[in-house]
Image (cartoon, rainbow, N blue to C red):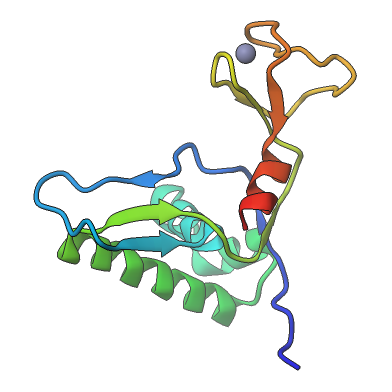
Length: 138
Ligand SMILES: [Zn+2]
């Protein structure tokens, strides 16, 4: 029986669902970047963490972190070189906190008391749980 991969910890959901090619594109295929792969690019290339720091942050070993990061870089390169849209979805992960999204004003927030039921930005009750949304999409 294959061993179930341990969930990797993500601090927050990505702000986007992916990137679209500008110019001639290969319409028949997409590159799927897993959430934990996105997270390694964010932590290492955007927040300039060391691989040791990022491994602690994502609750994985250093070699696992390196493997996820190499896969992420290969996929980003494939998207650019082959002109394929990059879609962020799936993988083995959990979010650090409960994240929510407002369907009315597109706000994302994590400090939210569910009994309030209203968006802290626009005050409408159009709130969905991003944690449930992303785990269903897995
Ligand atoms: Zn709102």
